[in-house]
Image 1 (spheres, one colour):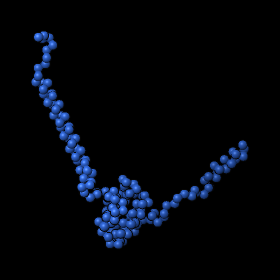
Image 2 (tube, helix red, strand yellow):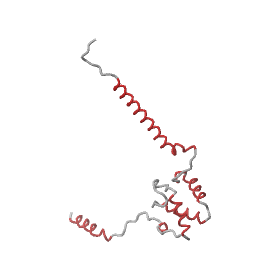
Image 3 (tube, one colour):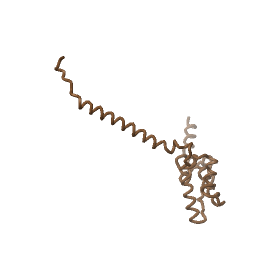
Image 4 (cartoon, one colour):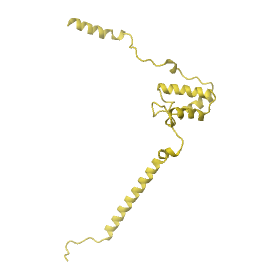
Amino acid sequence: MRALLLAMLAAVLSGPFAPPARGQVADATDARPIAFRDAGEEARFRALVTELRCVMCQNQSLADSDAMIAHDLRRQVLAMMREGKSDAQIKDFLVARYSEFVLYRPALEPRNWLLWFGPGLLVLVGGVVVWRIVRSRAGQADATAIAPAADDRESW
């Protein structure tokens, strides 16, 4: 029992001096900042990565995400920019690889009309329903106000 207590005490006291646990280490090349050639390249890069969605985070742009794939995609976007590709070519490449999900503003096409116009259509239908309900209740209130109240004291 005493040996067990001494072993536990030794483990607790040597904890701060133990070597760090070996886990998965992030790639150190992604931690370094991107070096731009000039201010124009930086402005174009920043504008482009804010229009693209991180495919892992889903609710963050490539500019905002810290996911490893976002680091890789940012470097790939910069490499394609330096190859002379236009913004449209870069977006087309990413759409071909990850689908239109990668775009914050997908193209307006017949297959996604519901996504573009669905919210407005829902508001319009809701407005019509509310208008009809209010109108029918107002009609009922007018009908009860015009009709005389029945007198229970009268017997026929």
